[in-house]
Amino acid sequence: MEVPKDQMSTLLDCGLYNSAQMLGCFLVSSSSVNNDNSPHLKAEYLALHGDALLRDKEYRRAIHAYKQALQYHKIVPKVNATLRSSLSASNRSSSPSSYNVPSINENEVKFKIASCHCALNESRAALAEMEGIPGKARNLQMNLLMGKLYRCSKHTRPAIACYKECLRHCPYIIEAITSLAELGVQAKDIFSLLPQAPSRNGRPPFDQFESSRWLQRYVEAQCCIASNDYKGGLELFTELLQRFPNNVHILLEMAKVEAIIGKNDEAIMKFEKVQSIDPYVVTYMDEYAMLLKLKSDPLKLNKLVHDLLSIDPARPEVFVALSVLWERKDDRAALTHAEKSIRIDDRHITGYIVKGNLFLSMNQPELAVAAFRSAQELRPDLRSYQGLVRSYLALSKLKEALYAAREAMKAMPQSAKALKLVGDVYASNPSSREKAKKFYESALRLEPGYLGAALALAELHIMEGRNYEAVTLLERYLKDWADDSLHVKLAQVFAATNMMQDSLLHYQAALRINPLNEAAKKGLERLEKLMKGVDPDAPEEEDDNDGEDADGDAEDADVL
Image 1 (tube, helix red, strand yellow):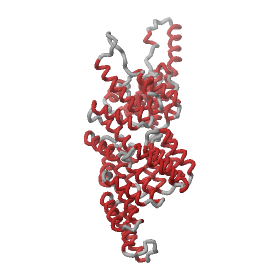
Image 2 (tube, rainbow, N blue to C red; image 1 turned 30 degrees about the vertical axis):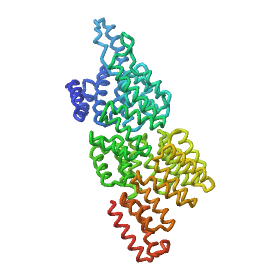
Image 3 (cartoon, rainbow, N blue to C red; image 1 turned 60 degrees about the vertical axis):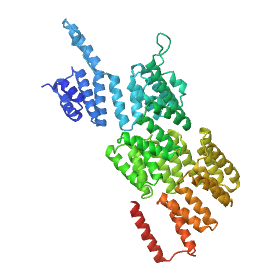
């Protein structure tokens, strides 16, 4: 009894993969393909069964079916030779169809096996399979997968070669452009792979010129971002956005960069715009979750995580967002979610950034260093440098902290954030505070609106007893910044100079902006005790402690 092969192909074409893989069981077990003279049919049917299993996400079974198909495929030449000799010996007229039997494309099957290994996060096995495909036989899909696998295994040169080959096939593969930029390829080298064919009069056709021009701008933007020239990259993306208004991809790229460099309000606006255009986007939404956490907006953060879980609960961004949601409520649960994001995709950078920050908050700076190092190996950016500096300072490893800060400054020579990092290291040592002051002032000259450098410089003034300079500096920023940390710092300065009423006003202002600001809550509690004439450092009675714990539990319940 025959099982029609064309029905199997029809089911696959219609996307009925579960039905196809069940029919495949009948196909490969049919008595007509299990005799010794039809290995070509067995190979073909096993490959079809493998296709059904692959598309039904049964990757292990698919690999097994494909490998069996390759084994039968190797038998085909031997059977053909036997058929030829037997036909010749019996003097029969041998038509080509007698032994030129159809079979499978071996390279295609190897590619599908590699794809299964990739889905199972088995990059080494996938690469071994792909390297069995001759270079000339590789198509566009194969070269793209090879580029990813070489990159994962840190073989930069062959990865670049594969991505370049992709662009020679099709210059509009955005993924290949971004990967080449991140691997350090210069924009001019990528330009040479883009369409530049001249028309009869020596000029490219207008449409082609226009398309290649925006594509060149995109290449330049990605190369700027990859080389940490965030300002240049954002300017180019802004130009592209004028040409392609409401382009979700460009808006997301801009929002991601703005999140990295601390332009939080601008980044949030772009993420919100993306959601208004396409509410089902998951890409970079973990970055948005981190911003909402910084802005202390638990309602929006809860809604975002709920929406992401309903869209695609298997994406790494979803687990990073979950980690951010659980941070400070249950650090262990948050850490579990961050690690889950990395298990899903071990190249997901924000997973490592969040993991490093969690280890710092759990007072485990050694583990934080390892997490930030992992992020840096994938792609160094400002946040991984900031995390490393904070971790080394927590370990009192000033030499390593200074090295990391200087590396950031070298990678981002026009970044006020990098200058501040060096200042932070010097500020941690009383003997080098004058150097810290110079770096903070340089950062403010480079970016006058950089609140982080202003707060750090004010803290330095306070340490050195220059309270008036600290207040003058901070009050300049009050006109333009409604920031809770700015009010907390002013409150602390006023409290230190016994200006209790001014201190009280600023603590209250901070809590109006962010009711969850722990420094403001603790500072206000301490200030109120001082104003009542109570020593804030005196140990409290047991009953008071119990009451305070109950209040704390109530606060935790409110947060949750």
